[in-house]
Structures are given as C-alpha cells and as structure tokens.
Length: 336
Image (cartoon, rainbow, N blue to C red; front, side, top):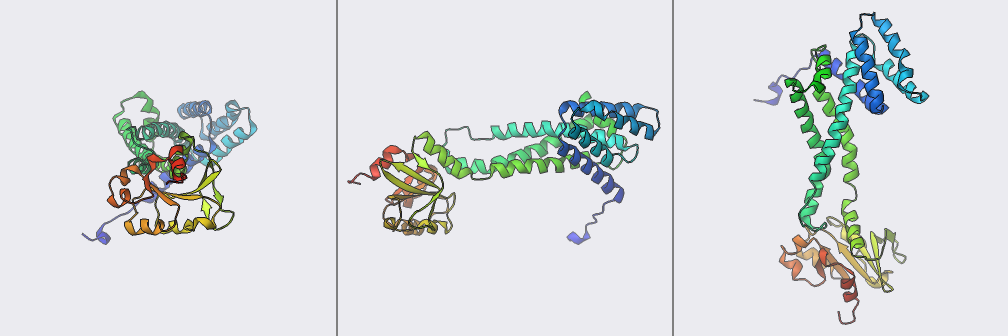
C-alpha cells in the first residue's frame, strides 16, 4: 500500500475540543497554583457543576470565590485570567476541572519519572569516565520522557478500568465529552515539561565528570582559560602541580577538534598537554598525529583502552583511571 492511499482525516469538532483542553491545561501549568489552591478551585467547580443555578449565576459565584483562594493580588489576578480564558459556556466548568486534575497527575508522573530515571543510573562498579558509563548517561535524560509517556499510558488504562476512586473525578468529566483525548493532551504537556529536564541533563556532562575525577583525586586545577601566549588555544582545565601546569582539553569525541589545541609546548604557557576523550573515534593515524608533538598525552576511557591494541601499545596514551597526582609527578620526573 502506498502512503498516499491511507485515509487520514480529523474531524473539526475533535480538534477543537482537544485544542481547548490543551490551552486550558497549558495555562494551568503556567499559573503554578499551589496544591491547596488547586484543590480549593476543583471543589468550587464541583459544587457549581452540581448546582441547579443558571450558568451566569454559577459563573458569578465562581468569580466571587476567587478571594477565598489567595490573599495575594497577583495570584488572584492569575486565577481570574485563567477563568476568563477558560470558561465560555457551561460545559467548560468540566473542562477546567479536568485540566486541574490532569495537572495534579502530571506533577505526580514527572516526579515518578525522575525517580525511575535516577534508578536508571549506573550502579555497577564502572568508572565514571568509561564508555559503558557514558553510554548509559546518554539515555538518562530521555528516560524521564519515555518513562513519563509510559506512565501516562498506564494511568489512563487504570482510569478506563475505574480501579480506584481517585480516578472518579476525571471519569465524571470525561463523560461530558465525546471526542476528548485527555491522554494525548497530557502526553503533549508532559513532553514539554520533560524537555527542560533533557536540556539541563544533556549539557556538559562529560566535562563535569572529568572535573569530579580531579576533585576525587585532590588534583589542583583551574577552570576554563585561554593560553596567555597563544590566544587561540583554550583549555577546559589547567592542572597545577609543584609550580608546573598542564593544559587539558576535554572532548567526548574528537572529529577534527583536537587540532584546535595542537600546538608545540614551547609556544604555550603550560608544561604539558593532556587530551581527554572517550577514544571511540580514535584510530592509529589520529593518535600518531596528536603525539607528534612532544609532551602531549592522550587519556581515553579505560574500557576502550583495553580493547584497542594500538592504544595500549603506544607511549603517552593512558587509561583515564590512571590519572592522579602520582602520575602527574611521574611525567615530570627527569627520567621519564
């Protein structure tokens, strides 16, 4: 079957009601009401939904109750704006209550996903600069998004089976709408929240782990700096030991970036150069090219080092787990 033969259509009524729920839920998330304020607003909506009063009377009662939710004028204004943007007709009481309840579940799912993500961390005795550890860490931030998506699926499976009275408020609101897909909308909102977690965890993780190695081994260092003689040379770290200094370039993978700091030592303001990398994209030719320069050293992940013969058979190439103050002292020994 050709793709253009597949009939994909979306009814406008289904799009509109789900779009409306998305906008309301997004506003609820943005307003960041406290748990107490959220529960109070849900209770007010529940009472109004059960009331036999006219729609406009109910709406007026809801607005009058805003002062009960907070003494803070900014918070009251946020709630008023939320009501202005959310409630246009009577069934919107249900939609707002549903959005408030979904947001409560979103917070629970996000926290549960973070716990699952933390359990995903490596617990075995693996060096934090090893490739095996790095491979796990690549998946870590995304585990928040994937576990959350799966938890939302589990949640709505339970809601459909009505296995817990906690789900009853959502079930009651869903009965009022034919084309509503709250699980899909919650998935979108959750993914937007989880994206920030992914961005924050995917940053300079490799450099941070190297810095942890320096701290754990009591190696004195400075942070990011430029060479005072050759301004184009940038050090991620500068190690300091007995009036000697070592420029360090930390690159998870190399490509051609190692050439950025590939200068003769006599032209630099440091005594040695360390290139720290996983080693997964190193080949023999690249290693020999780097080590053409005297006093340049390469450190690679320990598990990669033991797998590649050209690494452990080449001088000035070392596994990262050998980096400590004793090693630094040894390379400055006149007999080295």
